[in-house]
Image (cartoon, rainbow over all chains, first blue to last red):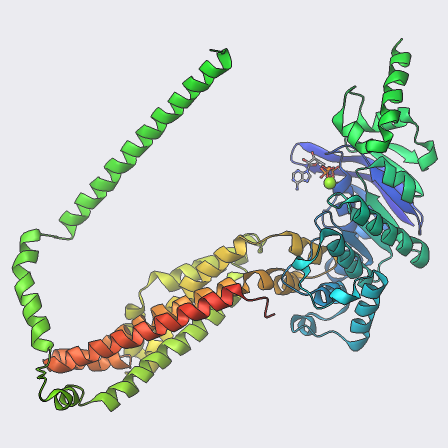
Length: 274
Length: 286
Ligand SMILES: Nc1ncnc2c1ncn2[C@@H]1O[C@H](COP(=O)(O)OP(=O)(O)OP(=O)(O)O)[C@@H](O)[C@H]1O
Ligand SMILES: [Mg+2]
């Protein structure tokens, strides 16, 4: 169980995350939606402790994550793996090495500096790549791969971290629909087969509906919605995305197949106004 | 004409006149500095023209007499000390080589704490930066002079002098390379629990290594020249011999040695350039 308790994060004068309290049971797949600047990325970074909160507590299985320091902090980062929109692989290294980098936190520093990884770890890496259908690229430089392939390598690296949780920050925002589906299916599969909790920032409501058990909506740093995809009525969506009428971001969030919904939403709003 | 367009024209004119002002200001500053330098440096055309004949006289005095009938024997006589000089050239190359190795390794160690994007601790950052500045602020020849006084004549003070100066110069270049890297890979490694050393090792080094190799080779070219010069103050190599023959007015030997140095420098420059292009186009070795 992951618990966030009144988390606040300010950047200078802007409040990126405002009093967020949520609990996430192990094994859940959670989609986080909200407009650009709502604080979704910041929230994930706070959980992984790439950023430190200004106020509030984070707990995981009753241990205080916000109090971790030094080696135990690094190990926590390993246990909640991150996936990024731009994949964040090391382009000049080959795929296998990139995947092995997921083991860094489990070693003393010196052996890792000479690229010393055990046989078991190499076997693990190959197995992870196989599972993601990427084993054939093991010795290719990471920057020669397509975006979808790179994202799957990044998921492989995350798997090597032996994670309790995966935090994915818009993992499919720079992928075409086909690759986006493959990546989301891979995440869902890790969630269901390995019981890994997945928190996933998503741009498209459609993917949140399709893959997630639970959807959290953020608006200006606060939680504006928390429920199942079925609870996510057009009016609720309107709350999350604000209520400008001809809003491109809103339409984009729905995706092309949902354009009808948007227009019905507008009608609903005008009813409410009348 | 629309109002927006009128505004645009006015803004553009304002921009242009402010540019013109800037250009005039800089031109004036430049010529001011140039004139000042000429006065302070006592650069005088008449002295130059007066001195020109004796310059050519000196050059021609150092040149050997070579006749086509006795060509080979003349050359042999000119290069009577070829074996000796080649050994000294080898000394010079060794000095430059060792100094480049030592200098680039210490620069490599110093450059990461001296990059502001990699080192968050301002204390360590400033120590690394400032020490590199001190290392490169003093010319090699001055270091060599000091070390010859303290460690005695020979190549060792030369190596030390050039190594220290290289550490400072290369360290600055290396840390500039570090400051221009792509940060996404570093974030990926940090997010998966990598510590500072691991982030440097896997996030930074693969990105910067080709440039670092290239700069090191370039430094080797520069150090070859520096190694020829530090000999003047007794720090070993061909320079020491060149200084000796200049002092003793052994004219033909001067030209023989200078020509040898020129040939060596050219060969090494050309080889290093080839290697540099190779290093840049290459995949990550690490
Ligand atoms: N490192 C930072 N320094 C200063 N301000 C920041 C920083 N990171 C985020 N912010 C600000 O915090 C707010 C939330 O940003 P965040 O990146 O979390 O939003 P987001 O929901 O992920 O948006 P997007 O969908 O565009 O990725 C924004 O106003 C942003 O400008
Ligand atoms: Mg974001």
